Amino acid sequence: MGLHILVINSGSSSIKFSLIEVNTQKTIISGLAEKLGLEKAILHTKYNGETQTIDLEKNNHETAMQAILKTLGEKGLGKEITAVGHRVVHGGEYFSSSTIITPEVLKAIEKCVPYAPLHNPANLIGITGALQAVPELPQVAVFDTAFHQSLPQHAYLYAVPMEWYKEHGVRRYGFHGISYRFVMQEAAKSLQIPLENSAFVCAHLGNGASITAILNGKSVDTSMGFTPLEGLVMGTRSGDLDPALIGYLSDVLKKDAHEIVDMLNKKSGLLGLSGLSNDMRELEAASAKGDEHAKMAIEIFVFRLAKYIAAMSVSLPRVDALIFTGGIGENSASLRKKVLERLAVLGYFVDEAANNETTRGKSGLISNQQSKKAIVINTNEELMIAMDTAALVKS
Ligand code: AMP
Image (cartoon, rainbow, N blue to C red):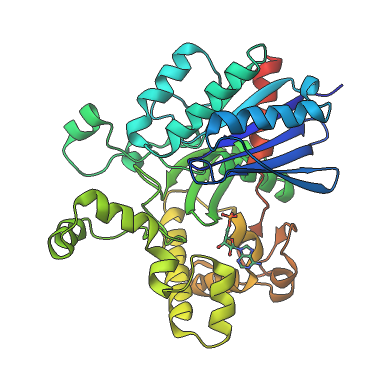
């Protein structure tokens, strides 16, 4: 029997789970407990093509973890679980790879809470819930930041007083590392180049968006920084701006710095610009109907992205391929076309037919014969977590 890994992604108001058979890469059952901490928490489960939704007795993470494990037990899947793999957002400078969870590991994840005050506590609840429910199973932490621990100093240090780094951990950490690791391996396979001798610029464009320069399988520069707020325009995040704006806005809006940062995280980006939605699909539909704000939001998203692709290229000795992934990167042919049109100066030219065909689960090249290579790769963070967990458990 193959290894079955329960993958847990415990967020601030939800817990996503999936049970993955690693050899076949098949998801046996998956689900989502949502609205945790809100009025009525519910658990959706997808199994054998059927979806089931139940109300949870209490609206907290512990109840949700118990309900998930109970559901697995009822379907006779509880005994199949070999190990549990947890997504953990922030591993600071403690973790440069995935690790088996021990009391020391838990302490280090706790120490990273100030860096990710919304995410790490929720991740920890998922871990402690699972440790209580299935103490006999090995548990593994897979970090969003770990992949970027290979950044050279010139890429991770900000030009601020050195004490801020030494005493307060102020540096670029980078995120989406689980996705980047999966996608770079798939891209190397697809392009038939050895990962140990490869150079990619990879754009993960989902509701959160970032871009990474990857050399020989290692991150050498990335756009997200101390937090996921830096870099590209995102669904609700502003990405880069002049930090002096925080002082200015604090004065004119009579809000403290935390409130301004909250608005930069939750009310900005595509949502702030369009006044309509953080969702690219909705903005593309509105833009097609002539909505000027939606059109402008997309143009700004594209411009910032193209600029960053050029900047990331400088971190590499050459670029073997530009990779698009994430909900927008995998599905929006029109956005990819707009980006490549801006990148003619770097030698990228779209193959219209291939680009239009590459959506909804399809991967493949979208550049033409004269172009440098641009490719779409579907990400699968759950599978990456399951593969890491299986590898650690086996060893
Ligand atoms: P993710 O966070 O990776 O799930 O990506 C979510 C983003 O992908 C949202 O902005 C969606 O609107 C966008 N997206 C998903 N499907 C499409 C599509 N067919 N066309 C354009 N954007 C899409």
